[in-house]
Image (cartoon, rainbow, N blue to C red; front, top):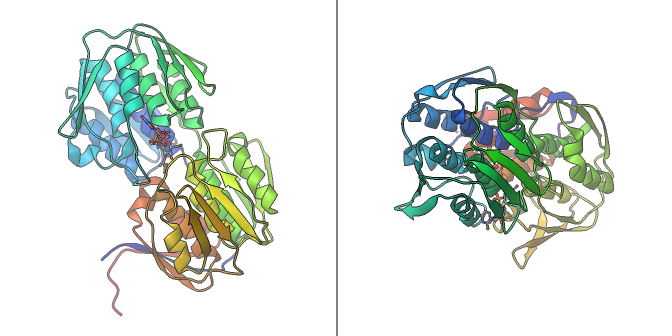
Length: 423
Ligand code: EPU
């Protein structure tokens, strides 16, 4: 039987909830720890399936790894392989962050092409361009990315678009390439800045992360470090939207409010009260919303990863909202699931959706079609009248740490059904 989440709708959320460490920061930082000549201790690592699979891959490569209470200890000195197996690498997107790391260590890497959420075409041409610019040869043989290089050298990399993955891979290549690398049109997401801070704490010279030009002087000796991962921007946003959808007064702690400005602005526009200080965000809602238009963009624009959760909330806003998805073309599939709950949505030309608010959603059996779609279904379930059962929750467990427990702590009524039930 499939695991599922069962949500009894209409409970009111109230109180405090803490944000976990960033998934997309952790999956970039953990491979980078292999570049050091001594162990690293990384704190605030989210205990999610993506992290566990990545750590298994490090163990397979020969590293000593321990993971306890959100702290990872990695000793890379025994790494002696450059070819992680498909069974592990194919299970997540970020496995290809190992390619530049293994290339730096062994001048050769053989990493199966990445998996991850099926949210549209996820090409890797910009990653390949970045590595080739710095002197590597990269080809795909039988579904495996094979990278080789005898001599790496810093250079200018011009990305065609500010891709998160290509920026991470270019940074991880550049730290091992002697000389200066400038990554132009770099992604500016908080997890890029976090990776840069981690690399700097290992002894690398990285400047400009968070702007669109990152400069790295490569070839330095890197040592192990103690580091704490940044709070998860997307989990913070998901909790903010859940609070707006089903909350009276919720405080989200351990967050970075400046990372959330594009979402806070949208929620305020919808009539939700958002305030913040230092490391917490307070969301107060009377559960009456104005429709708004949203267009996804790279940071500091509105994140594609929050498009689906916000769309769920817009299904009950007064009026019609236009949601435009510019990053991933298949991030509207989940709208079919929302329709089962009574939402009125229409997709126009595959990249835009019109959402006309209804008075309420009704609980139904639905599926998480990808990670953030799963978050959207949880939010819909919290708002709906009656019971919602969400299948496909392995997607959700890949990326959200204890999301059901966190919402339950706020007053939601959620059951994680793990066993076959008799009817
Ligand atoms: N693109 C290319 N060529 C490339 C790389 C990207 O054309 O070589 C295009 C993509 O098709 C897409 C756009 O550039 O249209 C942006 O893709 P990006 O490379 O930024 O995405 P990603 O690195 O594959 C990361 C996150 C995603 C998040 C996106 C956008 C990780 C592990 N994944 O993916 O996170 O949606 O950036 O911010 O960091 C999630 O957490 O649910 C998730 C999917």
